[in-house]
Structure formats: C-alpha cells, structure tokens
Length: 107
Image (tube, rainbow, N blue to C red; front, side):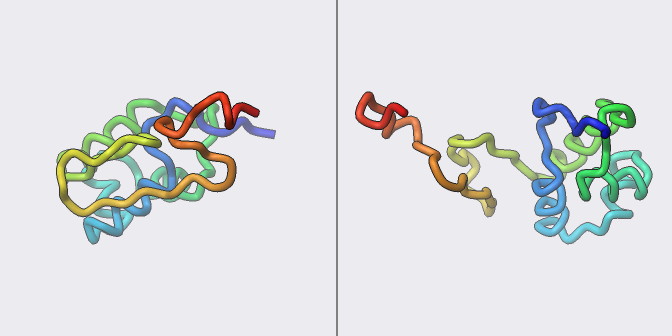
C-alpha cells in the first residue's frame, strides 16, 4: 500500500481546491501557472499523490503560484493578518484552542 504525502507539506488537497475556487481558476489554469501537469494537480487534489511520486518542487511551485495570486494559507490556530476574505476548516471533536488549555482539561 503506498504511503501518503508527508504531513509537513504546507498545502493540503482541500486547501488547494478551495484556493482555486476563491481565485476562480480551473485545474488547467493553476497547472499552467505552477508549471505542473494538470494530471499531477488532479491527482494531488484527490489525495492520490504518493511519497514515491511526490516532488517537493511541484508542490512548492503550486504554493508560490497561489501565494502570488493573494492566497494566504493559515496554520491551525493562526489568525488572519490581512483582513481579506479567507477560509479555514474547523477542527472536529476534541480540539482545544491554546488559550483554553489548562490542567483542568488534561486528558
């Protein structure tokens, strides 16, 4: 069974799809701007890229293309600094924001 992409990848498949939607870009448009093939991008967005096929250069170019277009990726818990439109997927079940951590909610 193939391994999945490294957790350290700065851009998830869902973020990529959402960023394209915000920009109104097709797969072909992002692929062209990031200098990747549309097939690679489609596989990435489906979560089909495996470690064996993974090229950090492709992911880096894709991330730069999105950032140059104004997309700002937010890490979990990070506040938006730009004030522009954005999105984030809320953590499900069991997530405790840093400001609410205490010995009372230690598991």
